[in-house]
Image 1 (tube, rainbow, N blue to C red):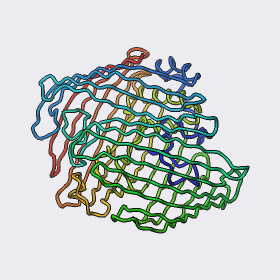
Image 2 (cartoon, helix red, strand yellow):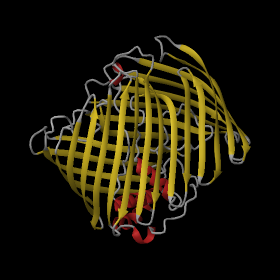
Image 3 (cartoon, helix red, strand yellow):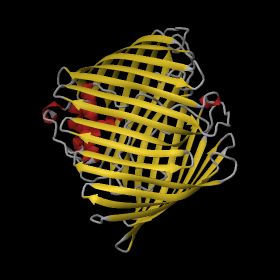
Image 4 (cartoon, one colour):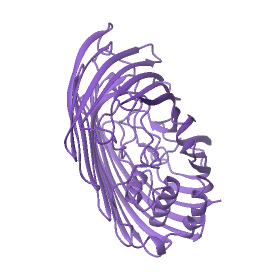
Amino acid sequence: MAQPVDNTALQAPGTAIPPPPDGLGLSTLVPPLGLSPPQEQSQALPQSSKATTDAGRHGFWLEPRLTVRHTVTSNVRLDPTNTSDQITELIPGFRLLSNTARIRGFADYSLRSAHYWKNTTSDKFWHDLRANAVVEAVDNWLFVDLYGVVSLQPVSVFGSPGDFTPANSNLAQTSTFAISPYVKGRIGSEMDYEARYSVRDTRTDANNRAAVTVYDGLLHVGNRSPGQIVWWAVDATQQTADFSPGRRIDTTALRGRLSYAVTPHLRMIGIGGVESTNQLSPNQQSHSITGFGGDWQPSERTRLFFERENRYFGESHNVDFEHRTSRTVWRYIDRRRIVNGLGAQSPSLGSLYDLLNGFYSRVESDPIQRAQLVQAEIDRRGLPANMQVFQDFLTSQSILQRVQQLSFAILGQRSSVTMVVSRINSRQLGGLLNLGDDFGTNTQIRQQGWNLILAHRLTVNSSVSASLGDMRSVGSVPGVATRTRTYILGWNTFVTGRTNVGIQVRRVLSDGSINQYDESDIMGFITHRF
């Protein structure tokens, strides 16, 4: 949920694959925003983090793991039938981190198998993958970006949001894989260039949702150099979004940017160009692009980046704000853009993981060692790294989406508070298609919600946590709405340096016109890292 902060005042707008997320700090190794090291770090890290620190120094870290989890639930299908069951899950997996001269990236994979003791559904296997890497094929010239995401995703925004169980009929196994080769370098001492091509493919096992393949091309030239007062850039982009029902959307754009350093801490940006697309009509139509932006960094701890453009669908904008102190990190994003397929999904190790990575960026510059510190912090406080308010829901067409999100983490000596507040407004483009998804009957879907997590460390290796959440989704059709409230209380402890156990009690209440249910469950787990 926490998105990467834009790191350039002249970002190439047509970049086919976004830079690796902040979760491992792979997108940039520039000096981080200033933070004071946590006072308790040296004496309070669990043995598991100390045992693996040496591996990070060599730029490569592989950690296999095995989790056994048992759940007793009052409503296994998360529907009005209130069918109870017990579920035993066996979850082998691994985390791989690389920070070598040629490959920088991560892969986190789990194979989940679930046995339902009352046969409420057949035993199933499914996959969970988050992977992102940058391969430097030729020194300082030819690169390849790779990423993949495989997970269970809600089919409808108005159905049950999860418990990530195949007994929930609203979940579908969904995968997104992308590859993007590109070359970049400098022409003389003044000009830089980049040429990039990418393919991103998204597929799902839901029969009533479309697959989509997106092809992107980018040609970029500019003169961004440190110390220059004026920067300029010209970007030519071409995108084709091919949906499986047969809808093919082509968009071509030529965009120029001019950036001026008003002060050493503030740059203003002017934007102009032209684009052609068949997004809103069967035939290509041309439109002008005008816009402006700014990049303000008053100190090492604070940064604000924003851009606004007038385009064929109206206004688009991108706002990223971040502020850090010795014990906190605060982020706010506001984006309005066209989304093809799963728009908010990214190959991150989790939104809370991203927040804490920013907190530790001053403590440890090496991304692998920093990842180990972040994971140790999450483990010893018993926090969910993948904290989020909304999952993506599956669509069969392009949509216009605005995402607003405020997130923060406050870390005390023994207690912590983390929170995410989100609002998403999604609109159908054109209003002429009925492809069987939620926009077949709704021209607009609004979502809003929050998730609050409180954690307290009882001892060096044990902790308790409480999680509260509220999610609401409202369609444009009168009466189409749903609300889900979640309450979780958990206890977690390390019994050895690499083995932790935990117990979690949960209560879920869901109401609305589509799916009303409630659920109570208790879950116990044991995880061993090899």
